[in-house]
Length: 259
Image (spheres, helix red, strand yellow):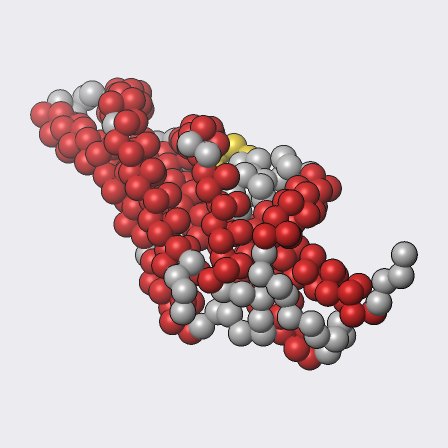
C-alpha cells in the first residue's frame, strides 16, 4: 500500500483539528474536568470520540503543520472547546455561590470541605448541592447532550482560522451575570427565612436580656436553615435545570447557528 503525502496530511488534518476542540471541551466541562477523572481517561475519551465522529465531520482545511495559519486554527479549536465547557462551569458555579450564601446565613461558613471537582474548599452546603446536581446532570444525559453539541458545532463553525467573533464573546460575558442572579434566586428563601429568625431573636434579646442568645439562636438558626433547605430543594433543582437549559441555549445561539 502506497500513501501519498497529500493523503497523510488530509488524514492528520481531519483527526487533529477535531481532537483539539473535543479535547478542550473535556478539559473544561464539568464532571469531565473533575480531578477525580484521570487525565489519561480524558485523553482516551477524546481520542475515542474523535475517531468515532471523524467520518461524519466536514473536511478539514489542508495547511502546513508549522505555519502561522495552522497555529491560528489550533488556537480557534481550543478556544471554542474551552468556551463550551466554561459556559457549563458557570452553571455549576451558580450553585456553589448559592450554597455559600446559605451556609454563611446559617452560621456554617466555617464548615468547609474539599470540592473534588475543582480542588478548592467550599462550604458543606455547596458540596451537598454539587453532589446532587452532578448526579442529576448525568441522569438527564447532560454529558451526552454536550458531546452532541460539540459534534454539531463542526457544521456551523467549521474548522478555520476564524471562528469566534467579538459579539460571541460579549454575549457569553453578559450571560455570565446569571451566575450571581441564579445563585441568589436559589438562596433567597433560606436567606429570607433566617433574616426573619434573626429579627425575632433580636426582639427576644430586648425583651429578655438575661437569655443567652448565642446558646439558643445558633442551634435554632441551623435547624430552621436545614428545614427551609429541605422544603425548597425541588425549587433549587428546578432552577438548576433552567440554568443548564440556558447554558445549552447560549452554546446553541453562539456556536450552532449557521452564519
